[in-house]
Length: 476
Image 1: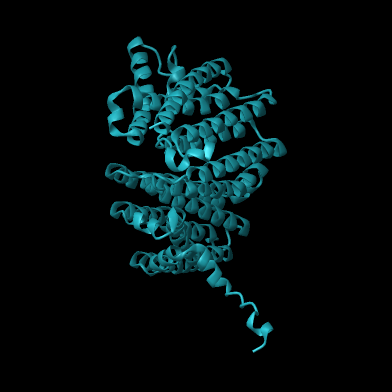
Image 2 (image 1 turned 90 degrees about the vertical axis):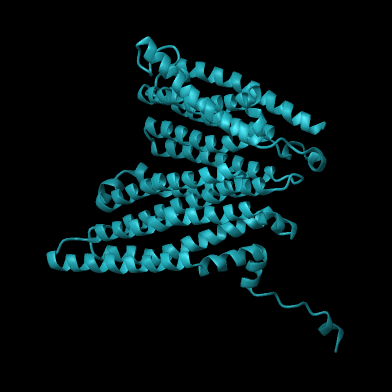
């Protein structure tokens, strides 16, 4: 055998083997197990059956009455997919991750070298593969509804696009929430949260689909609406991608530093999202309400981020002492969340200042409420006996207590004083009636500035407390 033959490079492995090696053995195991499960088989079969029944019934009715039945067939298949993709799939994904947390088998998986990223990737891709196959079962019937007349092909494609984006976001969020749930109480509440959020967002997706099915021509006349329908599912996917590294960080061992990838992805995603939203508003010459609505949505998303950021355990010094700002810990994660909230308020305020009918009060108030009550939650967790529950549980419960008190105390005082809850000196700190008033009267810039100053003061105090906890752990 010649020398050239002996040192000849081995042929590259097939692409499927390379993909399986990148994904990891847990991904392959989870995907195979999920696709072989009885729940998926029953749901897949029922969706196929629903597709045949809906299309055949509407085709028979169209033949008898010569009435276009495409919109009804499309809506029927949208409901069938929503039951699985918006309700069952997120709940199944949540239960799959919760089972790992309850049995503590994820610790054994980490010790085998898979890492937290591999665990989260396996659970997520298993759930997404089931959603993709469910979509593959219903999408052909949705396209067949176009042949029954009454609905345009563009409307069908936009409806499918919306359904897929919403299902991807809900499924990913369910995996992330299960990874963040440590105690039995958190996991129990998580079931209701996943079901509630799935019902709400699934209902919104069905409402959008219904508008496309029955009022498609009117919807497609407005360029702003079409742009939102095209880009918002992309934003859902981008937000969902921020959840995966955060879920991996929640599963990390105490000696691991996993928070930095989640922070970097969050900053890039929201930075690009803010820039794209402002560019879209300027390009389409959109109304003031679009920018105000965008500020509220961004603030709500960052509220979810901040809820987990402020309750993160302080950084561990031994293995991560030299990591600088990339170390884990509530202080650094909260700085990122508050910085993004500040950027949200500034960007949309400047955007709205260019309009004579500006709504700067709402753009300032939306992120200010989030900063204020997250900060008060941190303060309550440290100056009250809640601290005995532990850092994570005390901070999360402190935020809930702060929000409840912020709504009830000003409301009760207003009732005692005989005034309306959205009037009087304390309405501005009420997150419920205050937001209603800012939405109703968007020119309350002075009141919004006062709220922002109060929120900034509370944020400084909260960050000093988190920094003190971090320094105490560092020198322990």
